[in-house]
Image (cartoon, rainbow, N blue to C red; front, side):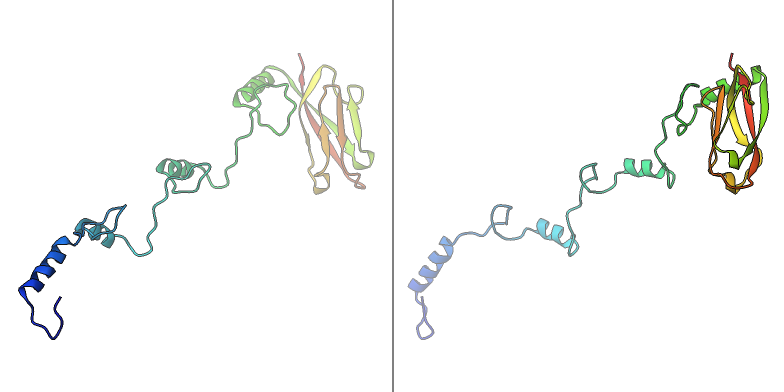
Length: 193
């Protein structure tokens, strides 16, 4: 190759041409090899914002992600504060008091009440006598089933009183023994057969 103090000769030009001809040709970059950036890749790169990240997929029960339109529709259809519906009782002999009665059984019960005479029995209750038990000898009619019991004169002092009407022949009232508290317990009785 020529230096600063030498004229370029034909031999120098031939050497330079040979070196240039034999040099590797640089091609467009691929995912496996470095190279020149293609105009397509440059356009794609320019369209990506700085700091952008790969979009996550839809969320699943085991992985976080984006909310799908199906899940969004489902979520919009649920009222705020909604809870899981409790099991509904579909018979009249169930003893779980924390489960609602089905509309069908409510209708059956209502029809039964309309067809039979409902007796309203009033019993005087004194707090100092609790717990107090009533049987068919002391106020509960024979062959009658208590379908409802309520205090005729509600009071804050009676809030923890309980009425157990598990059987037709025995009703137990229990609770605090607040002095001088008295009320009337109203029983709704229906013939058991």
